[in-house]
Amino acid sequence: MGVISDFDERLESILMDLGILKYFDFLEQSHVEGYSKPSAELYEAALKKAGTVDKAWHVGDDLEKDAFPGAQTILLDRKTVLETAHPKISTLTELHSLIQ
Image 1 (cartoon, rainbow, N blue to C red):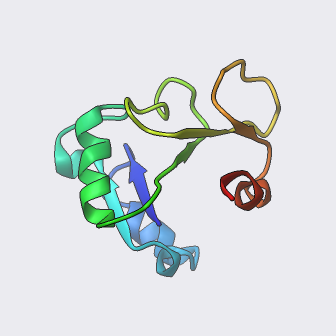
Image 2 (cartoon, one colour):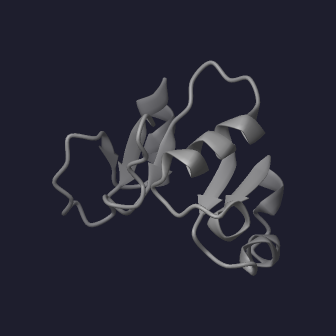
């Protein structure tokens, strides 16, 4: 599991301070790669870092920035206001049952 982000160089330390960095195998950051979300190049770079996988999903909360070309997108819609054909969840606890 990894993070794809347009956030700046503080992301790693923020995730560390939150105590959740250990749950991610990689960070893919646009300021390092030179591509912004939702570029196919940034998503492909993340897939390379993930290594060999049977399935991949991108979970995000921004309909425009998190729907990467070629990605199986799941949108986190906490307020249930997004209109999209992509699968949606309102909490991250719903994710496990959706990807089974």
